[in-house]
Image (cartoon, rainbow, N blue to C red; front, top):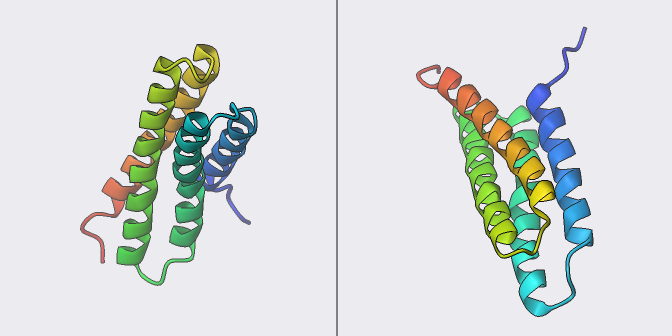
Length: 118
């Protein structure tokens, strides 16, 4: 029986929420540029988790999960910046930041649990 893959599900749902925020962004060049950064980092989390699931080795798995971890942290930064610049409503940003923080914690735990394993 297949067990649900929590990080796979959560990172995918997170990417969908990031895409929704991106679609609602302003039309000016600054907004497009900043929201583009958010879109790239926010959707990259799930893409790297998917790559990790298909990893060729434990080291490859750990490396891809580490990239997903860094992308989650970067996404937290962009969300904080966009909220503080009043480009995203604070309540939307807070909800997304909470999700990003949860992903960071899960990914950190996964990375830590695979350290030292061959």
